[in-house]
Structure formats: C-alpha cells, structure tokens
Image (cartoon, rainbow, N blue to C red; front, side, top):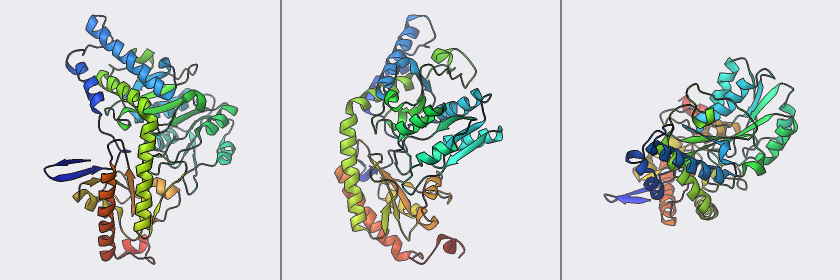
Length: 401
C-alpha cells in the first residue's frame, strides 16, 4: 500500500504482476549503462555480461532445484509455454499427434492447443471438478498410444488451485509421455523441485516474483533434447536464439535469489493475511463464497463470488477508493465474456460476473486488508441496493431485459 497526494492505494492483484523490488532494480541498473556489452562479444565488457547471465542462471536454477544447464531464458512465460507445448508436439509428431491439457489453462496453452488442432493434432482438454482439480483417473484413461505430450498447469492463475504435479508426472512417465507444467503462478509461492516432481518441462516468469517484465525461462530436463522453437543465432546453448535480454535476466536472477531466501516467510505471512481476509469477508458479507480449493491453494489467492451484483461494478468502485483487483471476466474489462476457469468449475453464469480475484503479496499490510474489507462491505451493500438481480434472477434473464 502507498499514499500519494493523500490518495490511498492498495494493490491486490499480485497474480497479474508484481512491482520490482528495490534490490532487484539496483542489481539491474549497471547493466543498462556500464556493463551493457553483448554477451556474445569476446571483449571484456561482453564477457562481463556473459558472466552476469551465468550467475542469474544459477540463481533461477537454484529456486526450482534444477541444474543451470537445464534453464533456458525466454521473453516470457507465454513463450516458454508455446515452446514446451507446440515445440514438443511438433518435435514428436512422427510418433503421434495426440496431446493433452486442461480446460483451465492459461490462454498461452489454450491458444497453443487451438494452433495444434489447425495443424492436424487431436487435443484432449481434461475436465476439472468444482475445486479446479483434474481427475488422475481420467488423465490416465485419456492417454493413447499416439499421445506425445501432456501440459497441466501447476497452480491456476484465477482460483489458485494447486494440482498434484508429482502424481501427474508419475502417470506421464509410466506411459512414456513428456510432461510439461506451467509454473508461472507457483514460482515463489510454493516449494518447487523439478527433480522431486519428476517433470520434463517447466515454464516460469520473472514478473510474478518481483522481477522485471519481459523475461521468462523454460526448464528442460537433461537428456530431453527439445529443439529450438525459433530460428537465429546460437544463444542459450543453441536452444533459444536472439540477443539476450541482459538486464531482464539479471533482474530475474536476483528476484529468484530473494524468492528462495524468503520463501517460507513469504508463504506464512501472505497466507495469514489471505485467511484473515477470507474469514472477515465471508463472515461479514452475506451471499458470497470462495471459488477453488481451500486446502490446496496458492497462499495469496482469494477468488470470491458476490451474488446479485456485477464484478466490473465492484472493480470500478474499489478502484475509485484506490484498491486494485481483478474480475472473473475476460482480460478486457469492457468484455462480458465469462471466465473459462469459473465456467469449467461449474460456477453459474450470473455468479461468474460477480466474482473478484484478490491476490496478496509481499507489500500487503493488515491495514490494507482492513481498509479493503471496509470499502468492500460498503461497495457490495451499495450495489445490491440498486441491483435488479436477486436470488430468482438469472444472468440470461437480465441480459434479455
């Protein structure tokens, strides 16, 4: 939270992005103007940049329990997802053209699935239960002789549900199928050890852990010779061409180092605030409920449905009070397209449009939470007093008025 010009600001959208921490910024600054050399250059300033990238690779690898040689920097988690899913499917297409993912993936995966279908692949989208979990039995039954890759996200970006990744990896390995997980939301919020989990590929991003935007990475298990997804030079051990994003990589590395150092403290403090928030909101505001698993959930995530009112209205009124949150609708606030995640877990259409995602982070205070609760109670009460929705009204009825 911050106060500027007497305006109180409370940021509760850490799943969307995080601010760059001061230590990360200070680590990055010299690489803009002093040690700015191209890492491929042989002279000293270039070799200094190359050394900085090696350090960052060590830091990122340490956070996920990987070897540095298994970490390849990308422009984003989206690129890493595309490389893992589309790249693996194309690489393995001589063995088969069937791939598996879920209905609640990030659009980086869902749209990759759409692309693969256009290329003649058969894509299975696994269903999830009311808490957002896949069925391990359904997963195993979905695997065929021509299945080459399974991609299932570690933790959902909307409802925070954490999948049983180690068990999924075990099933994939049993059937000789390559397994990828999108761990962008999980990174820095849960303990990750790629060796313990048994995953083959894992996508991560810097801006979710208080690092800069525009930098991600793909873990590729040693021995899995996934080819380059792009065409160009020999950067990243001939795996990912293009002049390295030096400052982004350095910042990602420092952010990873801090995330590993503070992981236990971060989880405990954020979860405590989250649980307090959920308890107060559901206890003091009628007709609201939490979406997703309460047990296996990201520590800072609280996705809550407020019945009989629209999330966009809640968002705008909260924003007027200096509180930043996300709705249960599409990325564009102007769109009434319902969340595919909430749809998949069976939330009724009218309730999807009354859903808000609150995500708590390292800079959130109890004072922020108390202020948000007070404003939220006033906001919900005000909107319900003027709403045409009630317990007997459906979204379809309202839209047809």
